[in-house]
Amino acid sequence: MRLVVSATTLSAVLLIIFLLSMCTNWLQYKELLISIDGYGNKNFELPKPISDNNVNSTNYVQQEVSKLPTPIQRGQRRSDSFFFSLRKAIETNSRLPETKDHLIKLSISSEVDVDDLGIKLANKSVDVYRPGSWDGAGVVIEEFKLVFFTQGKVACTVFKQLFRRMMHIENWMVDSSHLPHNPKRNGLTYLYHYSVADALTILTHPSWTRAIFVRDPKERTLSAFLDKAARKNGKYVNRHCCNERNSTCGKEANASFLGFLRVVEERCCCDPHWKPQTKRVDKAFMPFINFVGHFDRIQIDTERLLKRLNSNVGIEYPNGISEKKGDLWTTFGASGWGIDGNESIFSKDTKAKHRTSAMTKLRQYYNATTEMFVEKLFAGDYEDPILNFTRFSLFEEKEIEIFESSKVN
View 1 (cartoon, rainbow, N blue to C red):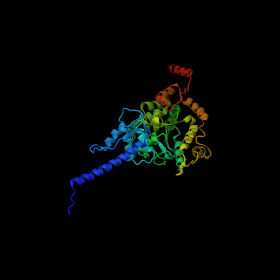
View 2: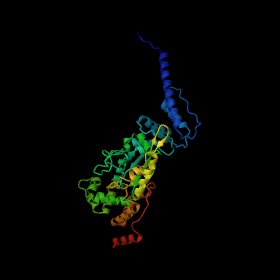
View 3: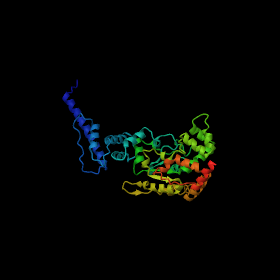
View 4: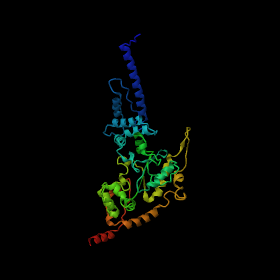
């Protein structure tokens, strides 16, 4: 028996399917718009569902989003930005509950180009999201809403030990050729372990702490020279900077501190151990850094960081009651460190002790020429308001004059 379907019946079925589809899209769209609290106008009228079946639903939503009242007009294609974020939040397996709502709100912000940030992450064109380097992508501790950007020669070993301890890794104190640095073995979670949508949330959401510790460029550069050039007879520099089989630049870097500085400048060698700190976090995401600690007060600032994270520590029960798990500084920072495990983290690096020993060592290796060389080489670090370095001079003006005159004679 042949089943005969008239053209009228077929058209009716297709019309019903289309209307059901449009109703579903409309309900989802309305729900998303209601979730946005950034418009500042709760009385605006939501657009009605389309009735013209010749209009594409995506284009329709883009048109209607552009009509909605917004706090500030950006002069850009806001609907495209809205849809990039929304699409990424829905299409990827977001594990953070705050991702979808945050990206929608971020998309209508007048101060953030979400398209640009998202594309940079998707293309892995920024160091903070690119796998590979041991101090490239940020370390993420989701439980405490922390992403931390470690830096070579800024206590990166101890900080990674701290994070492994906070993640309850049993051998967190190990310090070997691979631990705690190698991302493939250290058990830490990095930003690239998250989807683009979640990574963008971590890098921009106000409830997340984005932390970096910095060190005065004069101290850090000297530390890099002593460790990576002098101690290793220039072999490290030769391998990472020279890129020539019979190059002598490693020997030049090992010969003197000034020789090391010249190699770094002439070869444009941005090794992580002396790379400008203002370039540690890519320019697009640097404004979102909301915690900066300093090496010369490292214990104080580490305690401050852990206590800041306490607001993200707790257990929420269905009845709305929350319970604190404990103070992070007391649990992870105040004890358990040192050879005998009876010290606090960075206990030997108090501000007074560090400043006295650092100044003594700096004066042993620096002269007026090398000091000016470093100040010029890392001028961007000193001028960056986020890093907030306090400039200091190792030599008085009279000492510089005597040094300059001795070179002439």
